[in-house]
Image 1 (cartoon, rainbow, N blue to C red):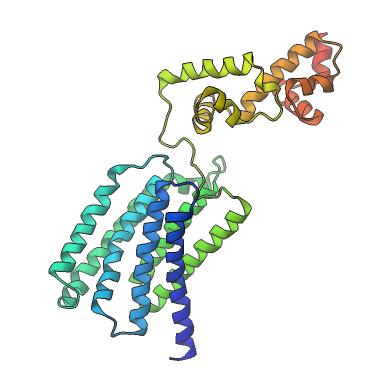
Image 2: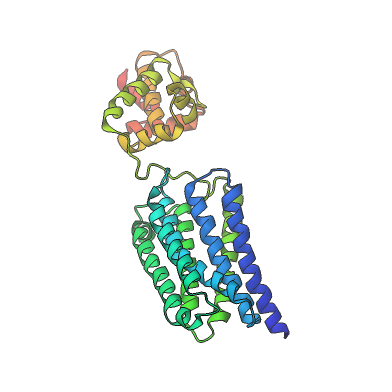
Length: 345
């Protein structure tokens, strides 16, 4: 085997092995066990099986026909798993309709493999079955792209934040689409598939390692907020009363180190639930909500208590520095604390 073919084999095989490595990682080693991780793990596994088949068949045409059949059959699940991944990445709870996408396809492929084994009916596989599998993959790519339409729109909309998880899921979608194109387009399909697939999985690893290094809670383990999970109207007023009473009566806002988890613990609720309420129903972040209490308290002290310095009032109200107090106060009132005291005196 020439050096060029040896390098091609090494590059392609490493791509497939890295795909398996990532599949195992998402299945067993992510800290947050999200269902979408399992779909991603399965997706990377079937893609890797297909790539391994291509690599070994390219360099060894006498490869076992059973191995070839398994590799080709794996393609049938690539499309459904891609769709299920992009559909569930923004959800906290799994949508059990996934079974309608996986079980029928699996049963059909298994049945065809038993009735028409590749080594006896190679012509049927080549003319009909393989083309049908790639058509199914293509259809699911289209459906997945439609599912991600709002995410794609963020790329061109300056008013919407394009998050890391958005970037990640689109990268997966584009990578799987490129692999499909690599299989179906070009005169040297096997050569292209090895290169494209390897580049795809290497890209996933590099992207993962880079973002993981900069943010421990990066895309895979990041809990996506609030999608498809609204708080019932009957619970909104009750929660608002409980939250307002807690902050006001216990004056929790005076704690400059107050965290969302501290308030959630007092309410016996999850941080996610409270954060969802603040964002969806009040249109505020936790810091904005607490700062409103701090500013109201500071305004009262500036109006009624002339013995405290302005800096002392800022600390008493829950701000951890003079500059933060001045900046926040002016943001909410339009004037500085000293000007406000002058106007109220």
